[in-house]
Length: 193
Ligand SMILES: [Zn+2]
Image (cartoon, rainbow, N blue to C red; front, top):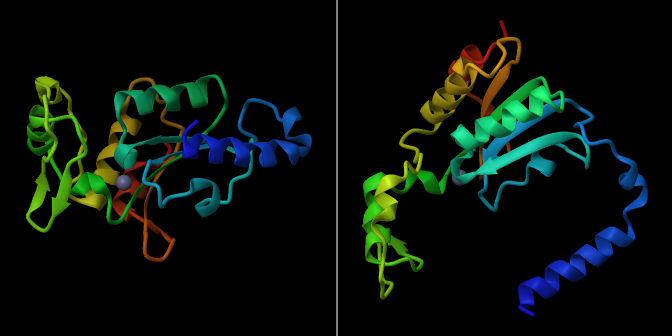
């Protein structure tokens, strides 16, 4: 067994030993809201937003982007599980700001192994083979943090499966301070109507 699997299972044994009455929690989120945020390891939505088990839906992907799949989850979150306020939370120093579709496609074309990054950008050092499949994916990278929050809130609000009475709030999490900073243009775009 890998060291990581051992560590995860040991941590889980402790968690489940102290599970208390959480086994009785209902499926729908008790506080009726959802957060779409980045998968970045420095972000802990449970902590930065004060969540306990059963409180809220947290949907995560690279960048916290409003991809088709993120919208699929949000629609389920409201339609079947009753959330009625949503947050889009991107963050400072996001890895999605460090590349674009062309860079990612080129790296993958050369090899599938982990690339390196320095001041001059990303470099592929893997031995290959790579794959051209990366050319066909929109990686939903980020050129401007606030603009990406506005873009995602706007896309969610405009979606035909999203009712207009759901407010969508746009924030940027500051990795240096742990603070959530409002994006005023996103808050305006996300207002319920
Ligand atoms: Zn990120």
